[in-house]
Image (cartoon, rainbow, N blue to C red; front, side, top):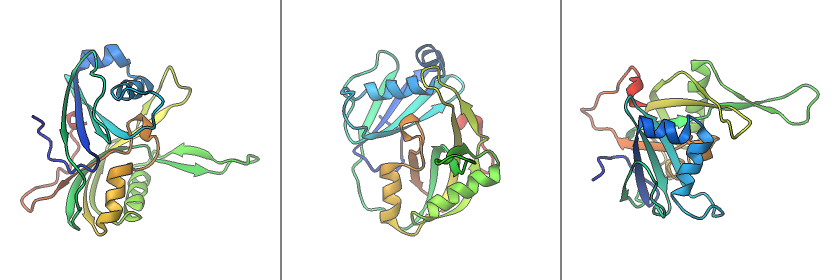
Amino acid sequence: GLLYREFCIMKYLIKWAMSINEYLHNFQGDFHKVHQGVWNLFGDQKSQRKFLYREEVKKNHVDILVRSDIDVQVLPSFGTIQKKMDPLSAIPEYKYRIWTTVNPIVAKAREGKKNSAKVPLIRKEDIEDWFKSRMEKNGVTVEKIVSSPPQRRLSKTKNFPLSTVAIQAIVKVNDGELFKKILANGLGSARSYGCGLVLALPLGRSEDFEENLDNDDY
């Protein structure tokens, strides 16, 4: 069975596990191909997206974690699928350890242009301030945070790059209903491309926060 203890908000928590060779052969590091692969798990390409996902690339394998309103409809031709039902329940005002991958961008005005440009944040301080601000707007105080350097990804099938940052944090939930919306809807932009899924685990008093990022955990 699944080893997850994460607090889940949608009906299903799904783990699509594969070897690193399977991942590279089928997706070639293209974030849009990963998006298509996850979408295909749910069959109808015309249906509204009702899932969030996050890639966890490790040394010898890759796990794609998916939180979904509906069950898997089509099993993939490679890798293995594990899943469990984890229905919505009340979220107590408590401390949690959270994991997420985000696409931290801000809108900047362009001289002579009507529309602003979306610019990815690069500096660690700016990224962490961006994250804290959005969490605070959703009833959450960030007490500790560790962020990875931004990773710039390109897609051969889409004409734009994607900048992602992996974040671990210790947070205090001050408003459970607002935090529930983050868990259900995700955080930030590029949620169709593996960003925004927030996994949360209640923090026990004996748990210690890992101050340094271990790249193998992402």
